[in-house]
Length: 225
Picture (cartoon, rainbow, N blue to C red):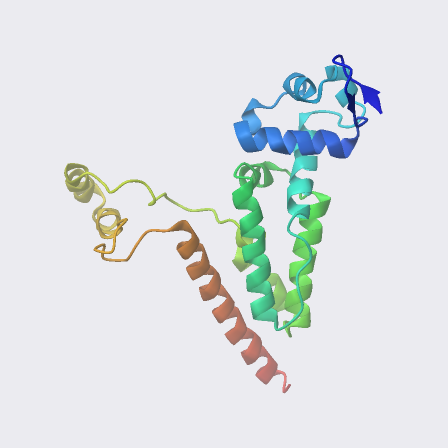
């Protein structure tokens, strides 16, 4: 083991140690704050030592994504819909622990090995659950980023309750958006119920899974199975 300047012994530098330190750094400060210099300071090494394990920041981010996705683990066994739902919600719990990860996953130009492995496990759940190749393809597209535990929203309605004067201005130009903004609230009195990210995620997930199950059943009947 290596020895630090204060005489304490530390684990030798490795790719996994670099990535774990980077994930911990991003959990606290976000990925924009990460640099090879700052990460080297966290690890108590010179910046050049990092380049033996990661070539650049892009490779560092790819490795961080793989480390986080690896925390999800393999899907369980059982009926396809319940297993799929539980696995997606497990992925969501992991990504909520690492709030920067969804943005980094979206920013990658190609999927990392761990992301590909995760998506492959989801495709396997569809196929072993009775989905054809064609319906599995459609299902993967329909589920989109939810397969990895997050969703890409068109607008954010989780902020504080809107100012009535602003709603009046909004209504003149965008009446239907204003109607939605006025209906959504953060208390029991709101028209559409309490606005909650987790509830909205599960609502959309259940809607998609129910629809896919109906298509799977109809496809089976159409093939005489």
